[in-house]
Image (cartoon, rainbow over all chains, first blue to last red; front, side):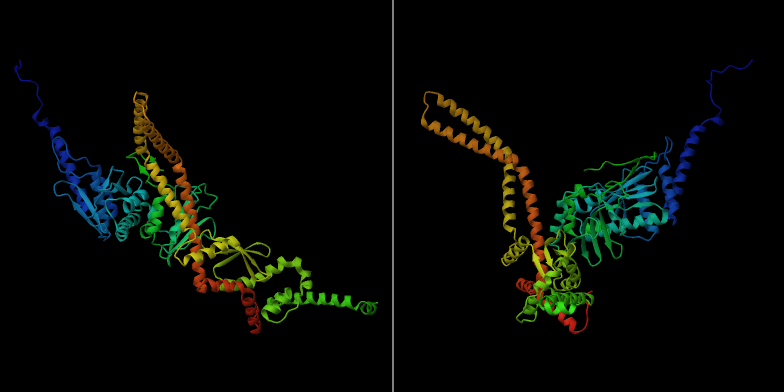
Length: 327
Length: 290
């Protein structure tokens, strides 16, 4: 006859608290993994290891009911850490990484604009994020991990360097900032084989900066002609095809013409920037030649370079979404 | 038989010999590329009086024979002439629009003007009179730092300012009209009363006149936007013309120093060119310009 007790049914002590223990173990394991990844990010000299570790950090879910990690950096911060570490590995020093004193947030200052403005990544997902100037909210490029691509944003770049009223940025300052951005893009392409869409920053002499217009009001070219005279620049018709050429310096020429290629369906007007060293982009021209810049901004609705906005890749799902252009 | 004809028609035979001689000379001159001689043969009197400065004798009756070859002759002679002109008048460009017919373009800039024709056989510019007049006018005005269209542009700009004010003043006018109508009603009602008098009528007429004036301005404002755009197009057209004229003037100054020197050079083009051909001939160098 077994002894009756008034005890409730229980678990064996050896089997108790296992879930609890596992949960903590998992969290600590994740925490350990996290520090390993972060150490790699901070110490590695290998760009691909850096990218892998950063993506690992983004994937990791830290913390549970049992173990809290109250102070965490955001996905946007990991993008910025990746960017600045990659520059550091390549001995580029024209930037300064800044950390908020009272919470976990990173920002970066770039040579040229100094401490005038600060940059961060925004709208960050694990697939990609916009490199953004905080005050003006101008998105200078989209860094796409999923498609391994960097796309410069012509429209916001122009807005930021030429239109925005709050922060005056001098031509020399623009050039410096742009150089840092270009350095980063070049490193991405070289070290990690990212595809780069330079858009308005493209320096290849052969590149055609396509505008949004197939048809132009006839006066657009006349306006440029009139504006070029006081600047002592002679606007001439191009030798073949229809359009204009402006010899800006001994080594720099801007062309604006209608695309001739009949095989191409598009007959959009485009710019060409030719320079002896192959270092000048359309943006350089706009920044350094005020009469062209004025003309461009006054007629922007027809002269805007396309694609004006970077192609976005939605998180996880690889579907290309074309941003609507403002017309 | 031959002997007979020569003795019976010595005069006719002589004339035919002269024609044959002329054609043979011209043929030879073209073969050895003696442009100077070709020019002389095509207009002997002009050559003798202007180049040699002697009394000349016309050979028009002989030159007449090759009148229908003018396009080919012009095409042939243009070769060296245009090479010479590209140095003497570096701002002119030529386009052969038909055999031997050369259109002149002034400059290599955007929307350069077609400026007339080059008469190769006469070695003469035939400028488009309207375009040339614009150039001489703008040169004269430039002495007072004025451009050809300065006045027109100023007037159009003023007109646009006025139109813009009309557009901007719409809401203010609407308010004024409301208040005027209220006042007119008031006066009208008062007039119907016992104490109607001339002074009230006068007051009413004044108010109505003011209202009508505002309504006219409203009408003007309605068309103002279209007018402003039209005026802007006009301003652009005139500015472009001024820009082109300033380039033309500038290139003349760069080559000739002043406009009169240019005009002189244009007037003496024939003698200057022929003198150059003679000088080349003496050096024994043909076709230097090719």
